[in-house]
Image 1 (cartoon, one colour):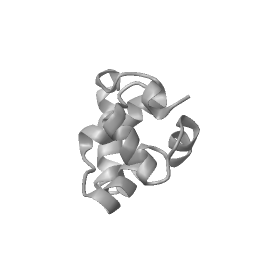
Image 2: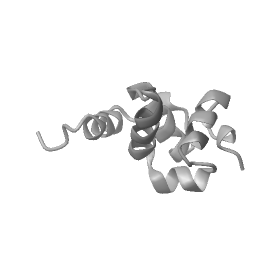
Image 3: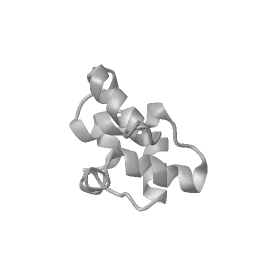
Length: 85
């Protein structure tokens, strides 16, 4: 299975993931959405909250719009380093 077979991942995001060493869904799951976006940000300055949600949805097998609001807030806070505030 290719990364672009997952929900929320098109060709461009797939290329970004492959650029940082994530080549298949299992590797994405192992890395996690937060670490994947951070790694992309390190090399391309291209990571954002919408990408975080897209990857989290892909890991869960759903469109990112269907992620529960509480879950989106939790991963956003963790991504931004606010989990301990």
